Image 1: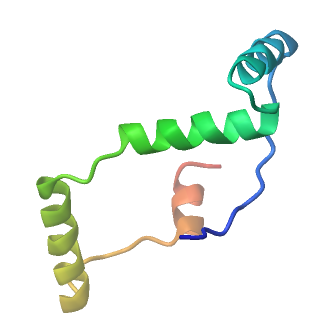
Image 2: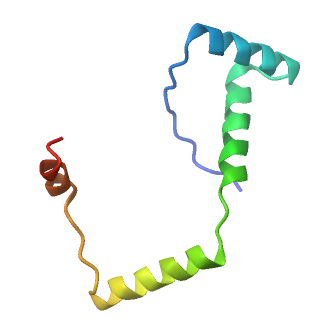
Length: 83
């Protein structure tokens, strides 16, 4: 499956960047490829869709379909918290 990729800028301090370059070389990869690999692995390792989560989402979708959910406009939320 081919996924659309989105570019994001990441700022790292020099020491961290040098450590990552060494790890990338040890793994036989360039830095960009290594960063993509470890970030993808991290995202996939820590995220699990449980039965409870799926049930909660189904209930929320049912409530939305019935008009039982109230949503707040993002601009109103920002105003409320003065941001």
